[in-house]
Structures are given as structure tokens and as C-alpha cells.
Length: 309
Image (cartoon, rainbow, N blue to C red; front, side, top):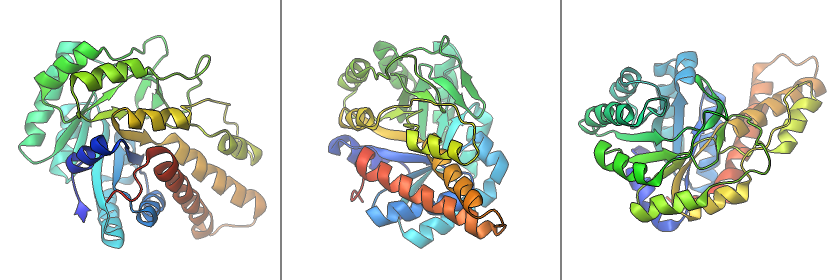
């Protein structure tokens, strides 16, 4: 296998009614936990890097860590830029070996979003790299992406079709009710399947992406708080809703917050139960194991992309 684009992954997912997991990475232990989980359940994989993660870990370190994971697991792995804010960062990632980039022009008006996305698409496609774009605004916080509930907006299906046609993007992140980070829904969480169905009926087989799809599993929030945290209660997207979204044409589902909660709760538990521990291999190893179990759960029970290589 090796480092690949998402093109073949998404074609298979669209036909098979499942989604590929796109998991955010920041360091070696997170990469190891994710890829070891995917290897055990025979799943294709997208490792995605935010601008903040790229700044924290440095581009070259992440690329070499991911290459090591490919050699260790022999999985098909796509390297994806998550929420590229402008052409410059997309260009740097394309030139630096990423196989997929997201240009997030959702903060711009419709025409400016098209113009920016088209510019990235032209540069990427000349170099064999695929492009994800975004239309609509998700509420919540992720790195430098901050959108209030009042400023969020659903994706318009008619605009989505025009956007895809005019930009030539390879996949589209849409806003149907998910949210970034540990964002608390007002009332019961709800996904606008009607919007999703309209878009998929207008552009059959076109890869649709869901951002902000962590469930914010209550047991991990409680565990973090039990061992000295102060994470407010939050309600994410119920996993049965994500399974249904995958069956209805979503090909890529992003997961980050649930990984952070799993890792943090494991490390906090380690320190509470072993107050004299100061070996990073012990507490980071516990975090890595928690990431691994979380990713296996997501792949098998939510995404349905196990045994799809």
C-alpha cells in the first residue's frame, strides 16, 4: 500500500455506504494509536493535520512519522491538511508531500470562496493532489476556526451543486448540524438529513464530508473530570446519527475531540493512580492505548470502514 490520495477510498465508500475516518494527529503516540487500530481492523485511513498541529509538531517531523506508520502497517494512508485558511498553506502542504488538502473558504462570501477554492484546485490537480472545500459554516471551535452558533449556517443544496461545478473540488464539507470541538447543542442534537439527501441526489456519488463529528462521549468527559479536570458537560453528535449519515452518502467523517478526551482521561488516570510516575513512556503509552481503542470503536461501530482495504 502506501501514501495515497482519497480518490479511490471515496469511490469505494460511496458505493459501499460507509465512511472513511479522518483522524487529527499531533504527535508520535497519536499517530501510532490510530494506525495500529486501523491495521488491526483492516481499514483505510486519513491522517489529517491542522495548521496548529503542523506548527506544533513541525511539517517534516509529521511527514516522517506518517511515513514510518505506512512502513510499519502497510496501510493505504492519505495525508490531509485540515482547514487550510489560504492558498499559501495549501501550497506548502502540497509541495511538502500531502496527498490531500482542504481549503476552507467558508468565511468568505460565495463568489470569493469559489475563486479561492478554484485557485487551490488548479495548483493541486496539476500535482496529483485532491482538494476538499467547505460550503456553509459549522459552529464551534477548532484551532483558529471559531464560529458562534449565531453565525453558523446550513449548506444550501443548490449553491453546493454550483460550487462543485465551478470549483472542480474533489469533495465538499457541508454544514448539516455538526459542530467543532466540545460544543454544547441547544436542545437535542439533530442532523439535517434532508439537506444531505438533496445534495447527494443532485450530485450522485460525489464525496460529502462531515466536520465536527465527535460524539463527546460522556464517560470520557466524566473520567477527565474525575481525575482533576474541569471539562464542561457537552453533547456531541450521537453515533447512530453518524452511521446513518454514512449510509446516506457521507464518505469522510472527521474525528478529533473524542481522541483528545480519550488520551487526556487515560493520562490523568495514570497520574492519579501513580502519583510518583515521571516516565513519559508510561503515561504517553497509556494515552496511546486509549487512542487505539477509541479509533477501533469508531472504525468498526460508527464508520463501518473495517475490512474495506
